[in-house]
Image (spheres, rainbow, N blue to C red):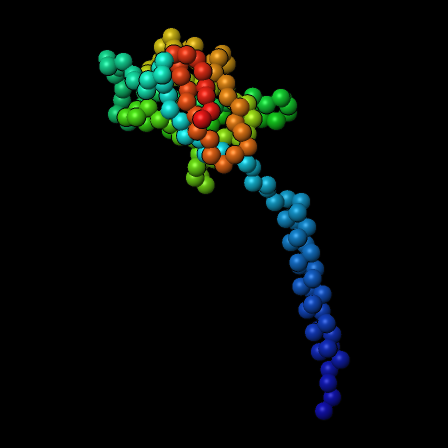
Length: 165
């Protein structure tokens, strides 16, 4: 009985093929796999002169509208890098807010952010005086988010301060 000369070669090709596939996958991952950005899950309180913020009693809101929107706008030094805006989930019952903390909702990247706050119904066409005072381009409220997994803060609209806790 004779053995085929191609049979030993087939076995020699398998390790070479596996090595080639492994090298290609490694190269693609090293050059093209996205890096996971650092982001802090933020929890905070919205205050007015040290007390929990409350909308005026006569404020009319559509169902489900909390009446307050808090946005964090990155203030990057490099204009070639896009600034991200992240919105907080506001709870009017206890005047707290959160940004991130789940895989689908990233938190805030480390660095400086402007804090924009809008008060009143989202569908209202006219912002309140406080909303324009804390607008996305002119808000005096800024915060530097540290390189941390979790950040606690207080935003006081009466004192115009943001305090990391």
